[in-house]
Length: 193
Image (cartoon, rainbow, N blue to C red; front, side):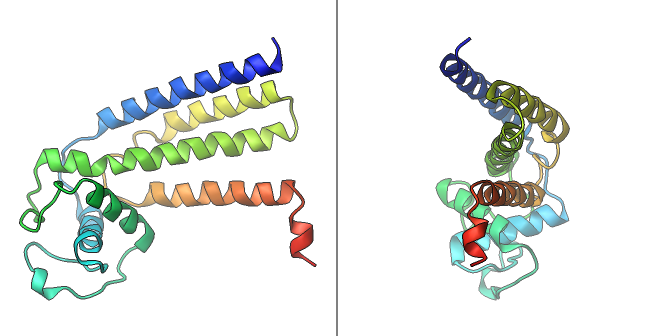
């Protein structure tokens, strides 16, 4: 098989695989109530989305908003953007401990997008590592195997919570790929001068 044909086939396989993964992960999301950490992250994200500051608002005490640094800001900022995109998700009257399961499912769907960023990053990072030592076809097969193993290991973790571990993984993987590309292209030589 010619390499150009294999590239099209590989791209098609990846599209189908990621579409399946996205759909399967999205179906796992439940409307179960959030626990302490997840609820704190929701409050902080809600505060960023509606008031422009990261504050741990409790129930309906919107008059007592004061900035907080109790959690990681970037994951909560990402969730805040999700809340803004889904403007009917929470109104000023609905942020309290008894969110409906339908609201929680929609809120937790942000985790599907974060997980997809993690999985795409895993494939790209694995391909970049394997491609340095193997042929493109072998590198693709090894990276694809890495993707499938990673999916099997992590797809059920944290998807139904509002924890920030996937966000951290996303940054680590893409940061690793960036540094790998930096060193593979010998740009580091120019940085040391």
